[in-house]
Amino acid sequence: MACILFAIFIQSLLCLVTSESLFDDQCSMTDHYLSNFDNKDILYFSISNDCNNGTVYWNYPQGTAVLNARRPGQQFELCILSSYTTTFDKVEVNVGKEDGPVSIPSDDATTCIYSINGEAAFTLQAPTPMRYMTIFDYLIRLNAQ
Image 1 (spheres, rainbow, N blue to C red):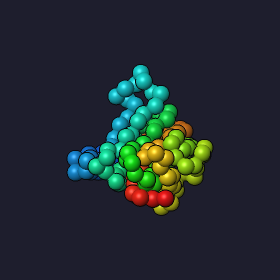
Image 2: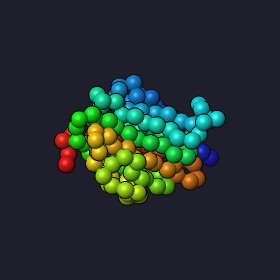
Image 3: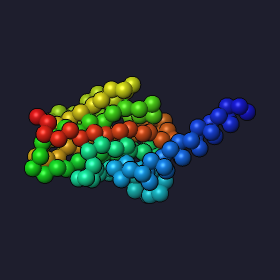
Image 4: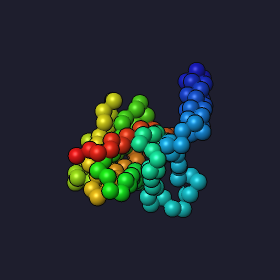
C-alpha cells in the first residue's frame, strides 16, 4: 500500500513540475504519442531560434524522436544533458559531424554534436519497455568549431 501511495505521489509531483516549468519557459517542449496514437513513426522536437537551452518532456515515449536545431549561417554545438529520468535505447546523429551511434547521456554526462551548414539533429530511440516519461535538457553552444 505504501508503495502505491509513493508511486502516486511521485507521478503527481512529475505532472506538477512539468506543467509549471512549461508555463514559465518558452524553450521547454513536451509531447506524447497518446494524443496522436495513429501516427507513431517519428516525433519531432524542433528547437526555436530564440532558444539556446531548455528541457524536453517526452511523455509515454515510443518509437523514435528527433531533436533538431537550425541556426542558418552559424556554427554551433547541440548537446543533450542527462537527468535522473533520461532513458534512451539508442542515440544517433541525424545531422552533424559525427556519423552513426553516439554515447547515450547518463549520470550528469553530456553528448554533443557539431552542426553542418547551420543544422544539427539527434535521433533518439525510446526506451524499452515504455516508461511514463523521459526528461532531458538540451544546450546549444554558438560559434563552436
